[in-house]
Length: 210
Image 1 (tube, rainbow, N blue to C red):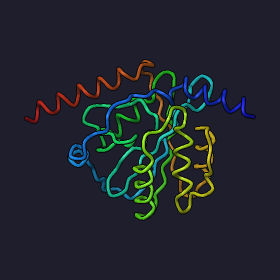
Image 2 (cartoon, helix red, strand yellow):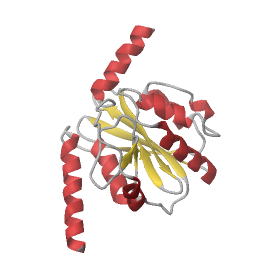
Image 3 (cartoon, rainbow, N blue to C red):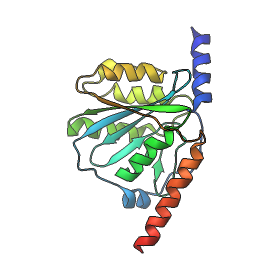
């Protein structure tokens, strides 16, 4: 069993849940400046990145819409300027940043299973606090850390703890009220291309408004 787990974890690292960026945390004033509050209902959105060829899960993250909207992206590699990060929590998740984040993961080799569930304001705030307290996550532990946060929330106890993205996704799907969609794109495999395109678009928008 131990050998099976080690092989599976190695596969997750190779697939994408293990690309350390080693950037310093954003300064508090930058986080405060970029913070974004979405006017939609409190919700938690689970992202599962899935290999198009094998069907294997490659990465897990969650978007939390609480008093502000953030993405907890443990051991993730999609990072962009003007999207401050502290301990694997990405701040300032505006509609444009949300769209960028989802589409950067969907490419010719992977698609994204997106599952959203509305929660009470209290549960959303608890999820936000747990994500902020978690800190940076080691390689290959994206799903373990995400399931660890979810399973502590009222109503999410059945999610349990798991290393495997697809297993977490299936457990999440069993929760009442989950809405689901799947995102496919045919972009090149290199996520850096999508990140560069987003940052260039941000620069252009800033220039036009100055």
